[in-house]
Amino acid sequence: MNSPNREVSGKTSALWIAGMLLLIWGVRMPFLRDREYDIDTSTWLSAVIAINHYPDKLWTLLNYTDARPLTVVPLLAGSWAGMPVNYSSAEIIGLLLWTGTVLLLYQICKLFAGKSLGLVMTWSLALFLGTICHIFAAYNSEHSSIFMVTAGVALFFLYFYRRWTSPAIATLTGMLLGSVVYAKFQNAPMGLLTGAFLLLAMAQRRDWRNMAALFAGCLFPTILVNVFYGSRGKLDVFWNNYFWNYFYYSFTTQFSSMPIAERFSPGRVVRFIFYATSSGIYVLTLAALAATLPFLSFKKWSSTFRINWIPFVFAFLFLMLSIYAVLQSGNNFEHYKLFLFVPLLIFVALFLSVSQPLVQKYAIALLLLGGMAQTAVSLKYLEGDLAYDKRNDTDKKVVGHIVAHTRSSDPVVVWGWRDGLLVSSQRPMGYRDVHTFHFSMKSPLVPHWTRDFVEDMEENKPKIFIEAMIRDYSERGHLFLPHDKVPIVREYVRRHYELVRELDGVKIFHRKETPAISLLR
Image 1: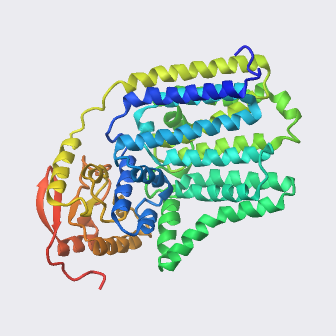
Image 2: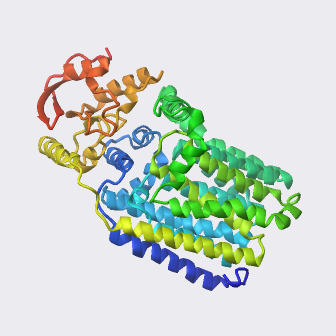
Image 3: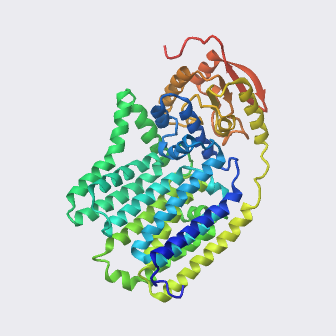
């Protein structure tokens, strides 16, 4: 705080970074629990179980992962390395990705703010991650997404500050940025922005060879995936599930009834982003610094803006797109807010680097105080266990039935949004979507999903079909349709399955020994 611009040796900074990472792991591990804190974690774990079961690994990876294969790949790698497919393993892998993100953030901040300020910004994130609430720690698509996007931003700044010039690196950077959409669709604008500014920086240097390599690398992942689907005559499956599904999710009211304009209203920003025990103090601290530092350092950064405008404009737009990613869908899912922290820290670090020493001193003090206040709040909530949920009692009964009447290799279909049943029973999903709320939407894609459902049921022949879409049991069970309200699904289940048991309202069907005539014929 007294001399934020002092030189720090490479050895000293490495020791500080190592200490931060040890802190994150040392604080988090005692709070590790093998339980579902976010239903999305069950979605990704169920996909791993399916990929490990079905022989066509690549097809399963691309189609049984909710169109987010790169979210599942780290978990899949963990399972192939011998880790059990459970919630503790998933959280450990998520923490590994955050470790990588912390290292990348330090590399970014060090480029324009120096090692000393870079360590302060990284320490701020490390402190937050060490005591992060369970809903944030639970593995989700943001973990891999943020790591990939941060890696892309790091490569952009490394090029801008002339740390690399190789076309091979440009190609790999393009492939990385072209792949972020396969971790999460909301990443696409941030990936496009990073690629566009990297192309702009290359164009300023007339670096045409690297521009061509970067552009080719960006296109390569999507071309490759399209060739794969096209070779199987399933190109429409790719575009329906990877693009149109998330286009309707993001830009219509099919999934969220919140009007598009209201999603970005100041009232919602305050309620959703700032008014939250999980991160409210920390986000408010970073937002306060982001709002004031550009004005306090205006004289210095504006004097060189004409020749050094790219980092500042990029950091601002990158921050705006992270806020857009959080708000745009209209759903108040806590894990969306994870997109905010790295862009806020980069923005603050950039303007802090051009601030006067006195401003730096008080800004760092505010940052550390806000971080410690958030830590105190987070520790309070980490100590408690989850409240009793009567649905867990039903889960145990249903899982018990699944385990008793199937082998580990028998696929199971859960109609509803109760993904944890497949994780607890360790059974592969028999239908490519582990949850079936899509059938309740007024979407032009429903006929395509219905055909996918029947095709998967015919090919995989799940031994058990569970009707879990009931009120107060399935996630949002009061909003979505049970299977008997979807005519083709109802008819398929009637022909091929028989009701054998009902547990707390959950209906369990077993496949008939002699299948009836397929609906596909």
